[in-house]
Image (cartoon, rainbow, N blue to C red; front, side, top):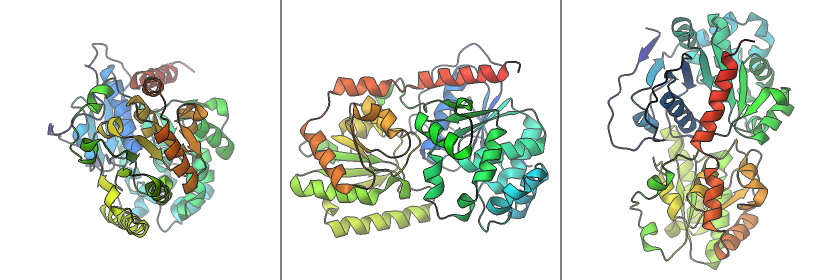
Length: 435
């Protein structure tokens, strides 16, 4: 079998990533498929699952198409959503499939795909994805990572089906492209340009990402739709009020700073730790970092590097890294503030989520949507990327004079799941309209 349907047994151990409303009586005719590499706890996976669940609750038939069912979010997939796993094929077969349906793309495919020593990890699933499209022929296929955006278009072309492909740019492409040392990223631009031009719709998660993509990939800005990721659920207050057993949040006498995100270069946790150390010298504070890398070996390596820096800075007693959590809102509602130290973002989910929990935010003014989320500094301090002293000063100033909680909550809840889902429905309506 080229792909298989997962039989899921709900565990009941965790609340859903987004508590979906009851399924509406109306049933839409458009069948939707969402392509993901896995169900790890990253922002793309989490936001895709929220979108898929929200659209399913509005009566759309929805399927998740996965390269791997692994990941903590697998337990949170609603029963009404079908999951299909793709088969992993030999690397040469993925390359051949990419070229087979798109022979005119040989120049663009050569460096990032055909000649790359380490092409995209999801390329080996391209033959199975092509077969899935031929068999299932969903009306719309959504993709949300840069490589899978390209592979979705390649698969549709190879399958020769009428499925509409919607690609989502989830991060600031120029930064993602330039900071990487990976061969495949360095030579990806011609292939990305071609693929995005042949998608049926291009979504960006912020206006900043859309502007960057337009400049860098040569796509007309009017052809890119900004849909903020579905971030703030209707029940966020209830989830934020759930019990939290972490001892630092029980005591209440020492401010706890919070950071949320996978340990990786983009999040720039070393700068955050140096900034925290500067604050720590002047006042008693603590820091909790939530998140873990997808790969256990890589996670251990990165955590080890951070632990070494923590020891070097002399802050071991007041920094904790408990890993991934299914409910970060409990932490946000109890933290003194959230710090985003990223060097680039698409649209940082944690910023409006924290605001909606009444948590003040300090963020770098990094490429991407962080500034948009904070309305260019009206709802939280923005500082220069990589500047630990500026971050420390902003933390101290925010701790001394936090913004009004009600004002923060109002700003955060503006980025609601309902508003995002409305925008997706409008896009689907446009795709189903006659050309």
